[in-house]
Amino acid sequence: MSPHDQTFLKHFVQLIGGLFGLTVVLATGAGYLHAQQPQEASAARAAAVQKLIAPVGAVRSGSAGQAELDAAKAKAAADAAPASAAAPDGAAVYSGLCAACHGAGVAGAPKLEKAAWEARVAQGVDTLFAHARDGFTGKSGMMPARGGNPALTDAEVRAAVQWMVDNLK
Image (cartoon, rainbow, N blue to C red):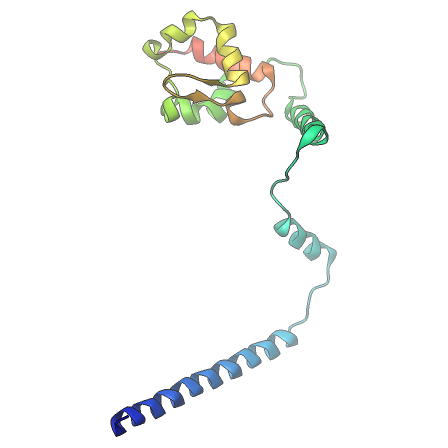
């Protein structure tokens, strides 16, 4: 090894050693400063942390999982049901959910144009309702059950379908 290489290696090792030493000093200082800060031990803080780290979903399988899922759907439907027994607003359901796909023609969803809906309307509103409620896969795309929102009631789905048929351009 040439003297030039030895000098370079010596300086390089010194530099790496210095950087390592600086890292140790900074980490130790940060640990010391963190230990000096008072820790909040409030119930509200603990609840906020638990909410942040809570799982966003769960796996349910078998009949027990299906029963749990059905109970959750029923609760969501009951929570989402309006306080009065008034008929659901099809325009509100459409603008809140259906317009995301049918407004822009996403994934083959027909826009609210008479030409795109002639053959569909000819099948009857009950068939359209069944496809919207249960889901449907056709030649040009697919319709997820209840527009992808399992909390929608049959009445809300029917109102949205009827509103869409009534408002074709």
